[in-house]
Image 1 (cartoon, helix red, strand yellow):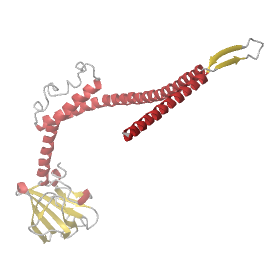
Image 2: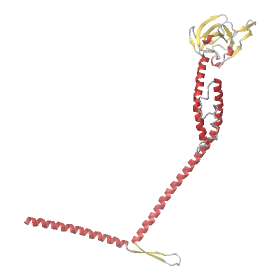
Image 3: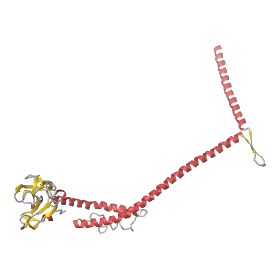
Length: 337
């Protein structure tokens, strides 16, 4: 029983202490706010004294109003500074965009100028391509779509009546030109293949200058000539090429196979090459030969050097072209391409 009274007494004491603590905090908080209120409620007098003999102006206020006014003025000044900086940034960005716009307009003018130059070039290209395709027998109608072709030309490309609404004329022209060029790829590729086949054909036909790098000159032509030693008229069966010196390289004028490498009193050191289509070429008066019988040679390959062996008055190359049993003028085949 005594222990119970002891616990009850301790509880009452603890409760009293808690109440006293909260009461003390409440009183302290109240006194704090009272003091703050008194500070803000203190009266202030602002006097404006003019330098002249004018009337002195008295303005009565309190600390709270003054503090609130300072906050409002500071906010206004801060807002002014912030928006002024934003305005400067916006002005700088607008200036930059205007400069970019000027550069874009200049680029657009340049594009228009280039487009104006491009269109006449495209016309010339179309005319040249049409003529080339006609000469080669390549049909154009199947290569140009109906939407961009009329009578197999670029008439729709240059028709300024049909411009898409809302688009630049230059853009429309370039699009149509691109479409035409894409469809011109196939005939151009056909021309390339044809030329490739012709190059293969030309490589099998004697058609290049027989002295390497095209040097020298023709010192005696094919046909009726006066022999330089006997001074008698005779039929010269080839062309004589001279560089005024020995040792210059001689090349095969077409692909073929070496059938003869020999020497006789007339031609001196000579080489005969067999080509396709029943064509033979003879090269004579060599100082040295670089091939052997049975060798396969390609057009432009060095087969010997210019000399003066055999019947010759000086270093030169005697060059003949035979078709079957007939001797023909080599000048008709040189640079036939």
